[in-house]
Length: 458
Ligand SMILES: Cc1cc2nc3c(=O)[nH]c(=O)nc-3n(C[C@H](O)[C@H](O)[C@H](O)COP(=O)(O)OP(=O)(O)OC[C@H]3O[C@@H](n4cnc5c(N)ncnc54)[C@H](O)[C@@H]3O)c2cc1C
Image 1 (spheres, helix red, strand yellow):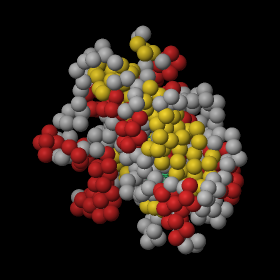
Image 2: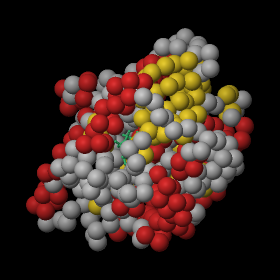
Image 3: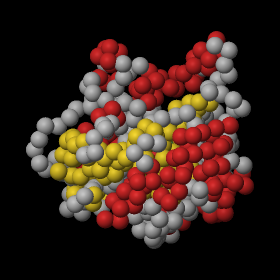
Image 4: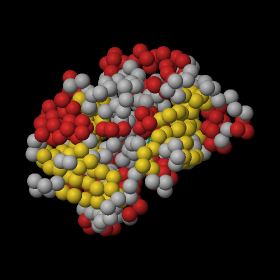
């Protein structure tokens, strides 16, 4: 379905986007001009104006009867969740960081604790409008003439086009989420528990709607098993002085229980950017008391990281100590469950980073996705680690991780730095299918190539 709507039928946001596209000289690359980002790799700077997305940030309709929402492509999950919770509904997967946008999560593969039953955000998209390289907005669905673009869009990172409108499924919530933090002293036992929860959707007789986990060391790891709940009780608040990830830890044999409002559960990791706020001193009780509450959110820490990348402050501090710059190791990888314990042991022995985040996932159906070939019916565990290690040869640790992930038949997300050769990259991320998609939907190369974006910082 080509949207050959007369200009008046377009929303103001779409028109602004199209006008800004038309204003970019044909020999210049097209990219987003957007205030927030959750992309970690450095990008080449440019003076060319980007696409104007200012009118594409809202929720258009929440259809309670159909349990769907029609949403602008650059709407943040913070705004989307605020709109759907008013109706007792939530998107099927809500990535942990408030400023991730729906379009960003669909093209960049967000993930969360509902992914063991709902898959990834793109799997609950019913249709999308996409601005393609020809400057047109087309509607792509799983079975219309743009179905190839629908299937190839996840993991394309804006290299085939930009989603301007998405129709997504929603699911009902209750007022609270009840959590159990279950401790494991053994990573094989933890992985066996994941397999059981994924298969039965319960643990020790109690329903499980959400699962994620944290590894502090080989003998201190937790699964947080959570369920929707309407039982009244005292709720915890981790947006103040308490820190969520610290609340998980205990040395009892019984799970530690907690209750959060659904809103606080969805943003439990945003307040301290998982644990990454530690690097800015925001977990020191004295600093934390002075740290303005509105800055206790991932987007504020993100600005500090961006400032450091611009000024090379940390590198200069290392140089004063006579050290080379530290190597950033900020990655999420997906490992088949059967190899997850092996990967974690290797990682803990090789890379001095903890804690590590775990999140099980399975494709929601038998439908596969060209640029991120996960196998239907297989359980994977997303393993996330976001820190730095002492610098040796540039990229040495990241390359070692890429090799180990490959040996264990896993995949790496592309939001951060990657070091693959073009051949390796094409083999891992659907290179042949991508070449056809690129030729069809961006024949003049208005958007950067995926390899250039992911590996060459284009
Ligand atoms: C430290 C860190 C931790 C992360 N943790 C998580 C996590 O816990 N859970 C999780 O789900 N994800 C996580 N991510 C990954 C994140 O979901 C992806 O990077 C996602 O693409 C970010 O979306 P954004 O809206 O912030 O987009 P941006 O960061 O602005 O852009 C990301 C990429 O997507 C493209 N893009 C943005 N919007 C659109 C659109 N509408 N249409 C097409 N392309 C678009 C951009 O061109 C760019 O290439 C993490 C990323 C980082 C850096």
